[in-house]
Length: 148
Image (cartoon, rainbow, N blue to C red):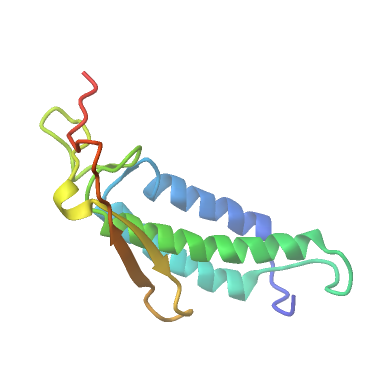
């Protein structure tokens, strides 16, 4: 609350949504994901410099609650973007433009990406820790999807 800037948490939330929609959405590519990381860093820096939270911290303050959620959303957005950059394949509903068949279908890479992963936040200026476990398929055959 002591920042006493000029922009509301809502304005930052809307800008965050636009970055994620434009660069980290269902169709993505490495160039856009890299751009999103830079934009997210800029947004975070601006958030902590220009945020304005009206009211008081001594009473129920929905604007303060929203600001705290938006701060968390910015951190989560960065981790999501890092994960999307790391997974260099089309996966589920997320289509990597660099990973498609000649017919324009999503191309799987089970040899390199048959795992479940999580990113552990290790602090503001530290790289997140990448943790993964292999997926083992006993009853399902992995194969390329064909929607034609």
